[in-house]
Structures are given as structure tokens and as C-alpha cells.
Amino acid sequence: MSETKNYIQSLFTQNKIPISINRSQLFEEFIKAEKNISAVNTIKENQAMLKKNWGIQNKVADIMDKQLIIPNGNVSKPYDVTLDLAKAGINGLKYTTFDGFEKYGLSYNSETQTISGIPIESGDFKVTFRFRMEEENDDSELHSKTIPLVINADPKSLWKEIPSDLDKDDAWKTANYWKPDRANDFAQLGAKHLVVASNRGRSHANVGSCRDDDYAFAFLENTGWSIVCVADGAGSAPVSRKGSSLACEGIIEYFKYNFTSEQLTLFDIDLKQQHENATEESSKRISFFVYDNLSKAAHHAHKKIETFALKAERSIKDFHSTLIFSLYKKYDFGYAVLTFGVGDCPIALVNKDFTEVKLMNWLDVGEFGGGTRFITMPEIFTGDKFSTRFGFKLIEDFAYLFMMTDGIYDPKFVVEAHLEKLEKWKEFIEDLNGKNEENTKVDFSANNNNIANELSTWMDFWSPGNHDDRTLAVIF
Image (cartoon, rainbow, N blue to C red; front, side, top):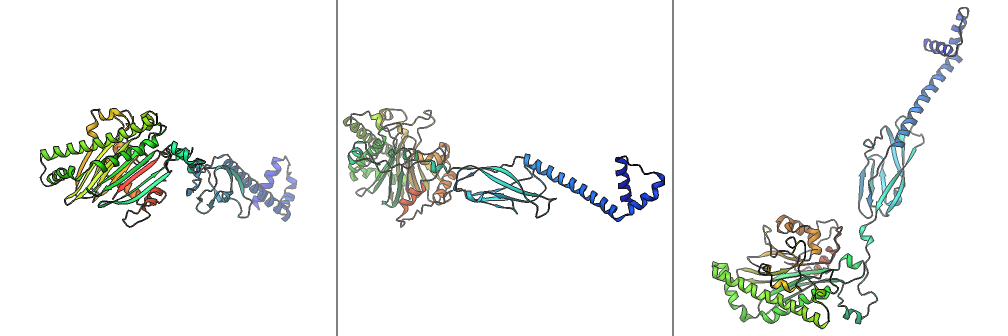
């Protein structure tokens, strides 16, 4: 009763309504009247409701002024984001939901405040954030706030895949040294197996031009030696695709006709001597043999390109190509591995128990200011660095002998220094075994007849900024 009396007295005072002394008894009766008590209670309830409504509306307005950012998504990539509303300054919410996510392949969990799914459409969109304040009833109307949503396109979808032989006849193909956009092989070479694949890069596919990389291999039955070549035609040279194939052909050609059993007899003896009790003399003879034979093979490849260029009435520079090649043979005491390289394509030998990796060549990067050297450059053979382009290794056994162009090396190893780090090669092998974003695996087993296709598929991996041809040869 006293609350009602105080409220009415305060109300009358504010409105300058006097209560005379002779009306005191009347006022007492007035404040006791049930309808007046009810009226006061109604007024107080309405005042409380007004204050509550204003408080809610004020908080809603604050939320409307806040910036709620939804992280960007990417088409075809799993999306899983938990909103941190408190960090955005949005507090005091009882319930939240979103309208509009479903048509973009996403959904919202109101309990965990998590947005998840796989975006199916790219663009700048708008979704509606709906919410209810803690002070509001469960059946009250939800408030709405428009939020921007950005879904980036799948970068792969921006690249075209135009066949290099599109609308081209056989005469054009012959005249322009056309080659298939993809090539791969699997073969037994001596006691080991070779799987090799060469894929045209996205930069070529986007404009319908040819693959510049190439490879070749052979097993010389009369001597037991195996040869594998990999070449990368220079992107700046107009017909480097022919230069790379000629370089590989030249190496195979040379060894087929010049690596004879008679010539190798003394070398076999020196290798056995090197294994059992290496001497300075045997080491020198081996070094000379490697230098003499591999340099002649490299020079033969150079001359083959030079002769072809003259007949085609073109500059040899039009055929610029890097070149690496390896020879290996199994003996009773282990394997002999011989290598040569010019350009920026690495050769690496990983031992059987994965405790050591040996980079069998140095790359023409860094020291030359990033300038790649090519087998088509005559100065290669007269430079003081020529004698360092050869590699030799006697090893009991090996797990892998890798040969690759920079289309593989650049995205997977990034810098030259990583090529000499065992852990980087272990990561690379794990990648080949399926530990990658695409979960693409190559099964390195001798009875896997699909291995060449698996390697070719693995080489389609996505790497921003790396869209060159890719060639990888693996001897295992």
C-alpha cells in the first residue's frame, strides 16, 4: 500500500496536483481503491516494459552497427568455421541462425555457431544473420542483419584445357614437331623398374600449345646397363619441344652404338677394384671413363640438335633444352650409377634404408644469377665447370633414383638447398605415397600395371604459381 501511496503522491507532485489537509482522509480512501491500485501496477508494468524494450532495441542497434566477418570460402574445398561473436563485440544472444547458406553448399549449426560444408558456387553473396536477445521471449520475432559472404573460385577452373592438336592436320603436326600432351611408361630396366610420366603444364594447356618436356630410356642387353634421360625444353625457345626429344634420342643413340662389351671390360674390373680395395689409380681410371664416355654422349646430343637445326634452317637457340641422364648397372657387389646434368633438373639417389640421399648433379641456378644453361649451348663443353657436371656412385642397393624437371622440383622442393636434405626427400616420398591434399597415391610395386597412369595423375597436383610442364622418372 505504501508503494502505491508514494507513487501517486509523486505523480501528483510532478503534475502540481495539491492534496489539501482537509482531503487527507479522502486521499487515503483513494489510494486504497482497488481500481487505483491496479492502475498504478499497470503503469509500473508498462514503464518496466518500456525500459526493457528500449534496452533490447538499443542492444539490437549496437549489434547492427557491429561488423561480423565470415571468412572467405573456396569452391570445392571443405569449409569449417566457428564464429567468434564475442570477438566481434556481439553479446547477449539467446539464439542465432542464418538464412541463405544452403544454396552455396553450406549449413549453420546454431548450437555450436559453426558454418560448414563444401562451397559449390563462387562469387560475392549476402546471407541473413537472424538472432534473438536473451531478454526476449522464445516466440518473439527474430532480428535480421545482412552479412557479406565471399566464395572464391576454384583456381583450377580458371585454366582451360585446350588440346595441342585441336583442328590440326598431320602435316601441321609434322612441320611443328607436335608431341602428345601426356606420355608415360613403365618398364623393367635391368634389375630395377622404371616408371616415368611427362605432363603438359597448365600454362601450355591454357593456350593449346605443346608440351616441351621429354624423356627416353633403354636397356642395353649386351652390357647390362640401363639408361634414363629427361629433358626440359626452354619455354622461351619456339621449338624447344623438338630440342628436348632430340637431346634424349641422342643420348640413347650414342650409348646403343658406343657402349660395347669390349669397351666396358676394364671399367668392370676397375669398379670391382673400387669396391674391394679402392686405389688412387682405380679412382682416376673410373673418373676418366665417366668423363670420357658421358661427355661424348652429351656432345653427340648437342651435335644431333645442331645438325637438325641446320637442316631446318633454324637457329640452334630455337631448340634450347636442359638435359639430365643416368646410367646404372647391377653387379655382384652392388650398383654403379653414372650421371650427367646441364640445366636445373635434379637427379637424386636415395639408399635402401632411407638414411641417406645423394644429389648426383648440381643445378645451373644461383651461381649464374638464376640463368639456366642448355645442352644446345656450345660453351657448356668448353667452360671450366664442365668436368663437374658428372656424377658417380657405387652403392650396395638403392630405394629410388629420382630424375625430374623443374615443374616437379619447384613446387615440391622450392629451393635448391632442400634437394640435399633427407627429410625433404622423405616428405616427397610420403607425398607420392598419398600424403597430399588430393590423397593421390602411386603404388610402387613391380606388379602394379597401372603405376604409370597413377604417376601421371599424381603429377596433376595443384600448386599456385607453378604451371610448367612436369616430368618425373623414378627408378625403383
